[in-house]
Length: 171
Image 1 (cartoon, one colour):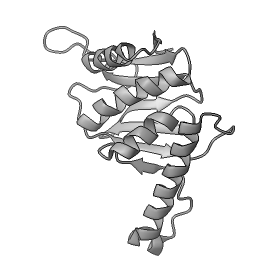
Image 2 (cartoon, one colour):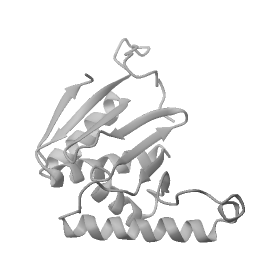
Image 3 (cartoon, one colour):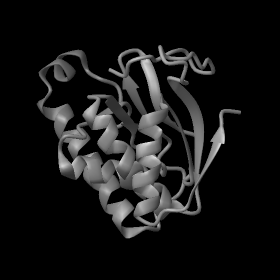
Image 4 (cartoon, one colour):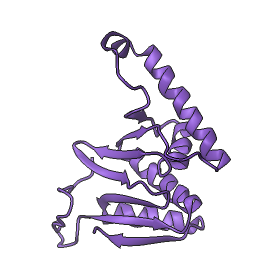
């Protein structure tokens, strides 16, 4: 879990007087650049053992072949989990494509997540009871609420990989 997390919008200082974390909107020049950003972010989320969930629905068909492939793969993973999950069989879960947990420790799921998170109706990351990442119904915009050092590492990795990223403070 991230140390120093706080409710969205508040920016407490750590023991050295530096800002501990901040909520930011991240905008990319295009969907590919956002995919690059989310790929870098997913590595950090995995390191912190964040719980990551996706809702596997889209408003418009996916024109990117890799994203479409990943979308279909995650649907297969979700429906297979539903079939093998004893608790779901007993309780009769309503929709196996909503709130699908993504295992970022599995390299294929991490790739799928980076390809589709910003293209589906919802994706989110949680550390404990604090939401640290979310999509905003845009293929080029997401928000993060993480320690400043983590955001800097993600931005550095994404821009080093060629992504054009713009950072905006929370609105």
